[in-house]
Length: 64
Image 1: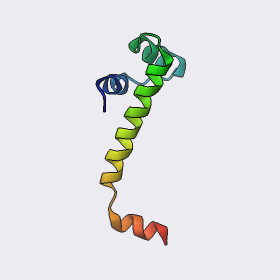
Image 2 (image 1 turned 90 degrees about the horizontal axis):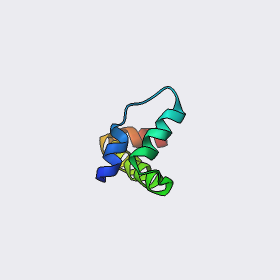
Image 3 (image 1 turned 180 degrees about the horizontal axis):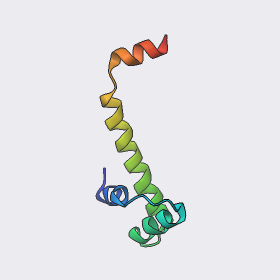
């Protein structure tokens, strides 16, 4: 995960999604492309981490 992605994911969660969006954009110097890139990289890192934590037996049984 990039440093920017880590900083975005470390932001506290707000009940108001608009406030969360404003905080992410502020962190990314109001550049929406940079904000989306950071979120995508962070999401990819989370998916890879979760993929490694799922047992292969569970995946096999679920596919049956």
